[in-house]
Each structure stands twice: as structure tokens, then as C-alpha cells.
Amino acid sequence: MVKYVLNKVVLAILTIFVLATATFFMMKLIPGDPFASVTTKIEVQQAQRAYYGLDKPVVEQYFTYMGNLLRGDLGFSMKKTGRTVVDIIQEAFPVSAQLGLFALFFAQTIGWLFGILCAQFRNRWPDYVLMVFAVLGIAMPSMVVGPLLRYLLGVVLRWLPVTGWGSFKQMIMPSLVLGLGTIAGGTRSMRASMLGVMTQDYVITARAKGISPVRVVMKHEFKNSLVPLVSNLGVSIASVLMGSFVVESMFLIPGLGRYFVDSITNLDYSLIMGLTVFYGAFLVTMNLLVDVLYGFLDPRIRETVKGAAK
Image (tube, rainbow, N blue to C red):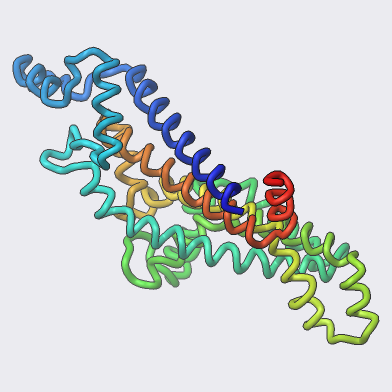
């Protein structure tokens, strides 16, 4: 098992290294100059480029950037004077994390519940209704669902505020919009996993013994359906966090998503690179933790690793 974990850690480190390298060189291909302005003197623009090292050869810039990255230094924002990228991440990431975790918990709970119901009522009307909802949830992007919910729940019914962040009511609508696609995916995955488990001999035997249906579902079917679903958690986390860019801008939430959108609009190269590498490293770390957890939950992986070691 130790060898399995070490292999995953090395692969994660290599992935982050490739991501940082690709991000750096792709940024050099973006046209435009972050310091070019008709109101700024040429001397000032040149001084700014020299301060950020943009007047040096690209290869030298790359090695400087990677050296700083290894020390946890993501540089200064080119547009937000006096603020480092690390300071911006420390300020805004807790908001994005709170939104993402709330949406993920909300989405996984509802998605798994809907999936269980679909499996128990297979090929009957509850199954059809919930699967239609799942398909619509995947097909409709947040930029469509968001305005519709804001108009319905915020303007017409006035149940929830349409912007802002902080109170519980302000968290509900953004989390619903952000987690809708994950709810749909969780419904489909849980349904498929439950249907696969329901045909197993131990489930059929448990029902034949007269064990209560609720106990059979929760102890035998649901518990054993979770193992294959763990591998999808990394993808779910990725989809929720990446989707927060649109949702945070839509609901005026002061998270990293808004900073990322603003950095692209303003050609803030250092902030774009810093946030991209941070998001990438965070998602790779989440996938690493999910892979390790999956290895502990699934005995077949442990046996495979032991067999390879022998």
C-alpha cells in the first residue's frame, strides 16, 4: 500500500510541474501588454516591465518563476498595487472553499438520495421523473439556471437574496446553482451503482431472510454502492470549483472566481498564473486524496499492490 501511495504522490508532483510549465509558456502567447496605456509614459512602462522581469529572456524568466514557485512565492499582482498573489488567495479562497463545500455537500446528499430512489423504483414514474431532472441538470449550464432562479426565487417570490455573501440565505441560491450539475451526475452514478449491487447474491439472500427493506437498502446496497462512487469525488470537486468562476461573478461573491475573471480581463499575468497553478495544485491534491481513500476502501487495489510487490 505504501508503494501505491508513493506512486500517486510522484504522479501528482509531476502533474503540478507540467501544469506550471504549460501555464507559464501559454501566458507568453497571449497578445497584449499589461502595462501599455496611452496615459502612462514609456519610461514608466519600461520600469514596470523591468520590475516584474519581463525585460529578461523567456528562459531566464521561466527558471526564476519556477524557483520562486518552489518557495511558495507566486509574485505580485500587476494590477492590484502592493498586493501579492498569495495575499489574494489567502483572502478569497476561504470564501470559494465555503461555497464549494456547501454546494458539494448539498449536491452529493441530494444526488445520492435521488439515485437510491431511482434504483428502488426502477422503470416506474419516480425513476422517470428524477432521471429527467438529472438530464436537465447536466444539459442546462449555470449561466442559464442562475438568472432563472434569481428571477423566480429572488424577484418574483422574494424568498432569497439575489446577490451577496455571508448569511445562510445568501448561500442557498449560489450553492444550488453551483451544485445542480453535480446533483444530476450523482443521481445517475448512484442509480447505476445501486442497480449493480441489487443483483448480488448477498443482497438477494438478505431479502430472502426477511430483513427489513430499509436495512437491506442502507446496510447492504447503499454501503457497497459507495465504493465505486468514491473515484468520482475528484471529478465532482473539480466541476464544482471550476464552475464557481461563473457563479461567483453572477452573485457578486468575493471569492477567487471573481479575481480570476478580473485577472484575465485586465491581463494581470502574474495573478492568472498564480491562480491557475493554485487551482491546479488544489485539484490534483484532492484527486490524490480520493485515490488513496479508494485504495483503502477497495480491497482489490490492496491485493493488486501486494501482488505486484511480490
